[in-house]
Each structure stands twice: as structure tokens, then as C-alpha cells.
Image (cartoon, rainbow, N blue to C red):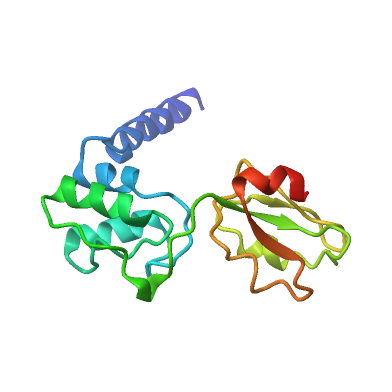
Length: 163
């Protein structure tokens, strides 16, 4: 039994080394520049798939509204390309926002929890939900599934007062 456990442990260690992400690869450098909102506004399901699409030539560098023009400029510099403004077809840049749930109106349906790509909403079925502000990326994906329209996006500096 100990031999089997040892073999599995060695196998996992080798696999872990092979799968570890080298922060010096172009993909990791590019992914680190993106805002990690996982909002899918760029047309990809998250920041890493968008970074992969940029590197493969499948996507333009200006498809990330949450990152704004500063992120486009940083990506352009990294890749040696010309910077351009964020393409408005993907949305408008809005700095530092977070979701706030009107807990008195929340019916506990859990649809916002299911929609949140970063698990920033907590609550249970038929109980009030709330947003963990430090985890919320401001992606807005929780807003449209809410059947009672009890979620608002507020600037980060006013989030404490809105709750």
C-alpha cells in the first residue's frame, strides 16, 4: 500500500511540475496585464482565453472594456504593436465598480450566484444574498439574471455607503 501511495505521489509531483505556469511565458505576461474580471465582454469566457486568442492572432488587443485604454497600451507595448482605443463594440470602460444587492428585495433565487464567475456572491436558496466586495470584479454578469432587479453597480468608493 505504501508503495502505491509513493508511486502516486511521485506521479503527482511530476505532473505538477509540468503543469506549473511559468510567469515568464508570453501567455502569462499577457494574462497578468488583463484585469481578471472574467466578464466575457471581449467575446471570450475569461481573461486567459482572451490572452490565448490575442497571441494566436484570433482576437485584437482592444477588446477589453474593463481594462480600458491603459490595458490596451500595456498589451501593445508587450507585443510590440500599435495601441488603439478600446473598441466600443465590446462596451465602455467604467472604472472601479462593484455589485451591491438590495437585501430587502432579494428573494434568494441564487441566479446571481450561478452567474458570478468569481464566486463573489454568497447566500442560500430562499435566503438573502450579499456581495463580498473585496472579491467582486464588477463584471455585471449578476445583473441580468436577477428576476427582481435588486442588484446595482456602484463605484468602489461609494460601495460601503450603499450597503
